[in-house]
Amino acid sequence: MSGGGFFAIPRIISAAIFAPVLAAVVSVNALADGPPKLPRGKGATCVEPLDVMRRNHMDFLNHERDLTVRGGIRGRKHSLVGCIACHAQRDGHGDFIRIDAPGQFCHACHEFTGVKMDCFECHAAVPDTSASHAAAPPFVPPRRGGYGGETRP
Amino acid sequence: MTAPANRKRRKLLAAAASTVAAAPGLRLMEWAAAQSDAQPVTAATRWGLLIDTDKCAVDCDACVRACNDEHGLTGTGRPETDAQWIRKVTLTDEHSGRVTSLPVLCQHCEQPPCVDVCPTGASFRREDGVVLVDKHTCIGCRYCVIACPYQARSFVHENLTAQKPYSPRGKGTVEGCTLCVHRIDEERAPACVEVCNSGGGDDCGNGALLFGDLNDPQSAIARRLKSAPSRQLRADLDLNTGVRYENL
Image (cartoon, rainbow over all chains, first blue to last red; front, side):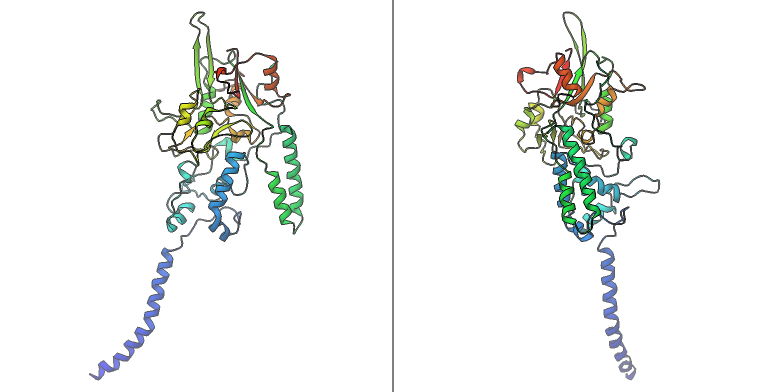
C-alpha cells in the first residue's frame, strides 16, 4: 500500500496545478462566447472614440433624427445612414448583408446585450447602391427661379 | 432673410468653420462654428407646387412612377391597401365632355387638418411648409388619414424590407408625399417635378409641374401664381394649400 502513499502526494500536487489551469481554460472559453467580434468599419477611426460610441450611440442617433426629421439638417456626423455606409459588410457575391443580420455589426452587439432595436423595421439596413444616390449628389447652386418649368413664358 | 440669402449665410459660415478647423487648439470654436452652420429650415421659405392641368396628359403617369421609384413604393398585389402618394385623377365634365387629368397628392396645407387631429404630434408641418409624418412618434391611429380632405395619406399594413435610406417607411405608420424633402434639403427638385420637366425615354416631358418657393417673389412659381389664375382644391376649407392647380 506504500505505492498508494507514493502516488497520493503527486495527485494532490497535480490537482493543485491543474485546477487553476482548468479554471483558466473554462474562463477563456466563456470569454470566447462573450464579447462579440464586430466586423470592422471602412474608415480608420469611428466618428467618436469607441467607448463614447458604445455608451452613447443611441443618444446621438435620437438627437440627430429629430434635427433631421423636424429641422431638415442632414449629413451630420452621427447619422444612421453614415453608420450603415461604413459598417455594412458584403457577402461572397459582393452584395451587401443587412446590418441587423446575425453576426453583423448592429445585431452582434445587440444580441449579446439583449437589447431589441427596431430601427430597421423602417430604415434601410444596407447602403443605397442605386445609381442616383450611391454617390453624394453634385453640388447644385441655388436656383432662384424655382425648380423645373423654367422655360415657361 | 430670404431663402437664397440664408443659404449664402450658411456657406459663409461653412467657410468660416473650415478656416477655424485648420487652426490647432480651437476645438470649441470649431464646434460652435460647425453648429451654427447647420441651421434648421425656416419659415422664410414656403415650398409649393403649381400643376398645369392643361399640360398634364390623361395617359401619362410618369410622376406616379417616379414617386414610387424614388421612395420604394412597391405594390403587394393588393391595391386596396397599397401605399399611394400620388393619384392620377381624370375628370370628365358631364355637360361638355371635356376631360381633365391631374395628379392629386398631399397639398401641404398651411393649416393641415392631419396635424390638428394627430394625438402624438407625429403629423407635423415643417417650418418651410412641408407637411410630414415623424414615424418615430406615429402610433398608426390613422386619424390623419380620415381627416385629410384629399385622401393623401396611406397606411403601411405589411412588413417592408427594401426601404430607401433617405425614405424610411415601416409597418404600422402613416405616410404620404414628403415633397421629397431629402431632395429639397440638397437643393434638388422633387422626383415627380424632375420627371415631368425632362423629356425623352419613359420621362413625361410635359412640363406640367412647377416647383419653387412661394415666399420668394422672384421665383417662377410666385410670378406665375401672380400673373395667371389658379385654384386650390377644396378652397372652401381655407387651408391655404401649398399645391395649386391651373386650368382646372
